[in-house]
Amino acid sequence: MNKTLIKDAQIITMDEKGLVLTGDVLIEGDRIVQVAERIEAIADRTINAKGKTLLPGFIQTHIHLCQTLFRGRADDLELLDWLKKRIWPLEAAHDEESVYYSAMLGIGELIRSGTTTILDMETVHHTEAAFRAIEESGIRAFSGKVMMDYGGDVPARLNESTEQSLSESVDLLEKWHGRANGRIQYTFCPRFVVSCTEELLTGVRDLSKRYNVKVHTHASENKDEIALVERERGMRNVLYLDHIGLTDPNLILAHCVWLNEEEKRVIRERGVKVTHCPGSNLKLASGIAEVPDLLRHHISVGIGSDGSPCNNTLDMFSEMRLTAMIQKSLHGPTSMDAKTVLRMATMGGAEVLGMEQEIGSIEAGKKADLILLELNEFHAFPSFDADPYSRVVYSAGYSDVDTVLIDGKLVMHNKAMMTVDKSIVLKEADRSIARLLRRINEGG
Image 1 (cartoon, rainbow, N blue to C red):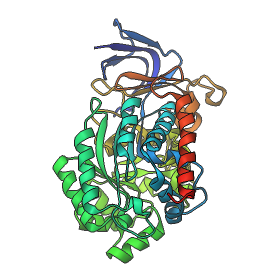
Image 2: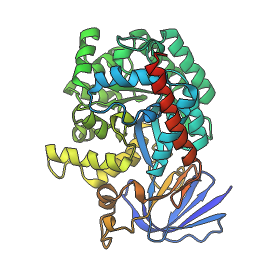
Image 3: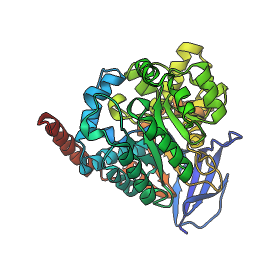
Image 4: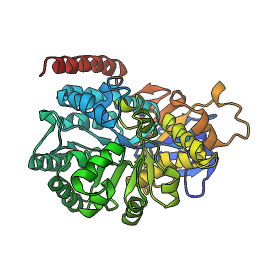
């Protein structure tokens, strides 16, 4: 196996003990084999990290790669109008090439800003194009085609039959689940209760149990969405999902802004996971999730940027800062400290994905998904006796990410992308969105 030795870094391990040290990390193949103050080993590659900060790669637990092309095309709307007027027509216009470059554009941004693992939800068609981008780029991803078989104002091209939605999802799972040394994990992705029949959702329930894979859906993001679900299904989102047997440790719910106490109890008792998307929730005026309360109830909560058109950035540094700041205004300055937020972005995300034994911290035996930050800049000083968690969460930014390893492989080094060709992706992204807009204007 190839060996990589990272030397003389400030290492923020994010392990249970909260160990922070200056030292070395030895990687063999895709795994960390040693973390110590000094490692003497012959390596195929040595990375001089003196003066740099080594972290576990960020884990984003709610992303829509298929929407990256739509950045700036759906601003200043609330959720249901945002979907019906802008996002669904754009998703319906997608072709295979546009999904591929939308995914590559998003992945480039994610890697550049230190994200190494994502939980992604694609659109109805051309999901294999996104999987190809994931495989080629080297990012770790849980992903699946979005599932939609119900609802008004849905473009015909997105409204699939129940049988078609389930069978296509299984076909994709059987082809892609576990590919690329296990970096790609299939996830069933019913969009939300508003766009799914009960037959589809119970089918997903059964398939998730049969294959033991995750289910990823939106829930309780917006008050109008909740009212619509109550009107059509007779109960609130989480209670309805529990009623049909979908609430278990494989279920991951995006947003959960408007939960009542009974829903929180169900989430806690069933082991359901939650992903917090502060930038998206603020931009769509959906509200502020009660994250401190969820954490107090020992509910696993990760962080995600959501899609580019409801946030405009996929930068985890921005999401971490928002995660901390918006709670302070409601619950006081100590309600979300920097260490808690950085844990949500690393080990918290790993727990949401059921990957806490594999990723999320820098420990021997874990996958070598790592990022190096170069913090020798005005905005990150003084460094003398500085709190390392505060420095990352409150001061650092995406431009400070210097090097990214996933599965022990360099995907960015000295700020140069290794697996995504920036010039081609930017050019083809513009060509693709122009084609989609033309298709919509022509009614095609």
